[in-house]
Amino acid sequence: MIKLYWSPRSRSFTAIWLMEETRLPYERVLTDITTGAQKAPEYLKINPMGKVPALTDGDAALGETAAICAYIADRYPETKLAPGVNDALRAKYLQWLLFSPSCIEPALIQIFTKLEVPPSTAAWGSSTQVFDVLDAALQNGPWILGEKFSAADITVGAGLHFAVRMFKMVPPRPAFDAYIDRCVARPAFQRAEKIAERA
Ligand SMILES: N[C@@H](CCC(=O)N[C@@H](CS)C(=O)NCC(=O)O)C(=O)O
Image 1 (tube, rainbow, N blue to C red):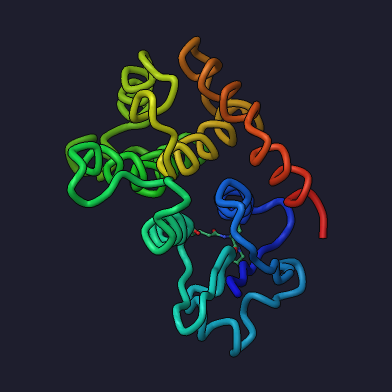
Image 2: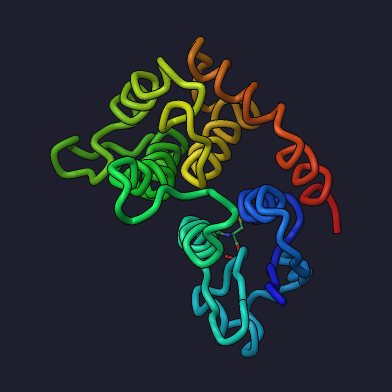
């Protein structure tokens, strides 16, 4: 049985949304970060970063939200959350799947801390560049790969929802609003929101 280690009101939401999209059976294991459960030696064997979410599936164990999305989408291709390895869409899928941890997250930290980093040095360029690039990529839609919804929409959609709607760190734009509305309208997103809200 797949086990998803999670804590309320945390990045676990993204992994819960993923699992709800798959309709695979899974067990949620509460790992309340307000109690320090994420630093327990047994948990560190699953995710040495001592953070949620993490996932186990038989002998497989991993942390990092985008890696969990990639693992589940590839391990369970019947979920149709990733283009196959021989599909040309796979290239852009991987790019956008990793865009959230590689670019959206650091851009938000930059906004929050007002950190000055030369764009040519910063791996994410600048926060302006990150959100301009996303805006352009979302012009056609309905999803980041066009017609196909994929695990990349789960990482990008959760990141944008967090940045634009929940924490209002990024001003709304028409393409962001339309995309977030489409994500929020998904039944799996709504189930995940209810689950992630409280223990
Ligand atoms: N890079 C990780 C970040 C996970 C993360 O920052 N989790 C936070 C909650 S949102 C956490 O577990 N914090 C508790 C701690 O660090 O002790 C991912 O994408 O999964």
